[in-house]
Image (cartoon, rainbow, N blue to C red; front, side, top):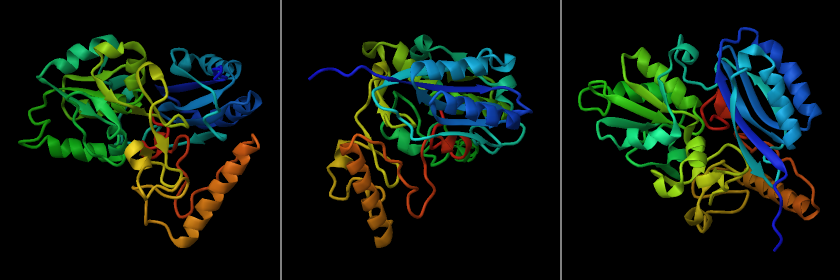
Length: 333
């Protein structure tokens, strides 16, 4: 079989920066992305920018260049990956109170984050038994892959993290006595904000993985890696492994949960309609609507066309970046 040359470039980005005029950036940024055929989600808030975009390489680079022409974004970092298919259906630039919602007033990660640790130095840090390693992502993300020794807070949303810290700071908790703490997330934004929160709680030695899991998987050879499993990503790739190659998961089109081989073999898995996580949670009418949407998508694929899936019945759509602004579920890096 002939190999297919990847056509689309995906760029994940975020930056904490004071942005009092964030609302004024929405319309020109939306227009620029539309002009260049770039899709995805970008969030703007007083604390900065967050999101993931994709398109033809020249279009993505044009958007990045426009952002960096603003002196406040001159140091903006991004992570790239290639894809054979466009991983997003549309482009949205949204205004939010926070670019990743923690719900703690007064935090300023741009000025008070913890210590960055480069991917090549991460192994030595988390191998130290005196360091508490914390995965700041949500439970469904941790479930498909994480680092050795990492603690799973079992949060369903990022906004639950402060309560977990408070609980685990009590006598007998893993954070009691304010130990050295190393935290990580997909691309860096959640662990960076988490370090600012821990410092506000009196923790002195707080570290976070620079560039997040994605940079680690891109940088550290697999034979030297402390990572196990896949890393969930907030686009149509669903998950990636070492070298950022596509992982082994599909997405449930009903509840947006990542599905591995075991879930895909479940009798409760019906493509586009249900999976073991959401089976039995829809009304018959909702299941019929989901089945019809799946049928239309299959017909569109057979014709070589795109089909824009309608919002899932009975719940908000969770596509490209709801988490970045709401719960860490969609697009938070």
